[in-house]
Length: 181
Ligand code: GNR
Ligand code: NI
Image (tube, rainbow, N blue to C red; front, side, top):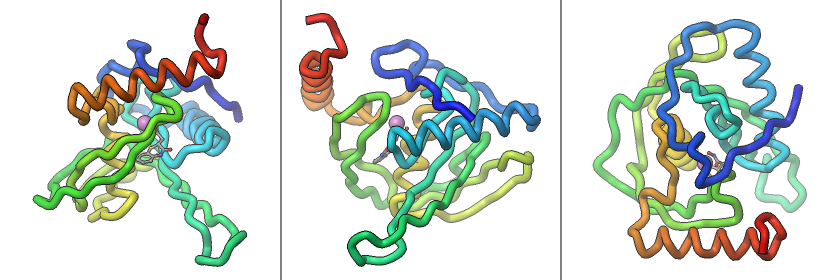
């Protein structure tokens, strides 16, 4: 297992359209394991393969919710793999959620998305699944599926709000010594 480098905006890697996964072999399973390790280390709740430089239609999600409301409740891991995912239907009702992205580090903004989707996808063995999805999983799956199409959450914002986020990102990178002054 290995932690992979996460590509960040404006790297053109993130703007590619990822290609379908055709071979469900052992190298795919290695990539999935690396993606979980990278996502947990970041930490994040989702990661698309293109974010680690593999433009294929694969994403992982783990909402990692606490077991109870109690402070210090153990985190329950629920790793989920989505390969060649497709959205079959979306609800008419859109809700706001404050999103972040490991490829737009430390920046957050409210995005509107349908609150329920019906999706189908394959798992690491190539088996098909179909499910109704809502809540945070629906938000995260739509965010990750955008990555497969070269779309970032900031693309859903008005030009003004997007420019504000990018300006704050540049400031954050400067303050953290991530770009030349
Ligand atoms: O870790 C992440 N948190 C998050 C919060 C709200 C909506 C979407 C996300 S996904 C993000 C990790 C990431 O960048 N996935 O592509
Ligand atoms: Ni993201």
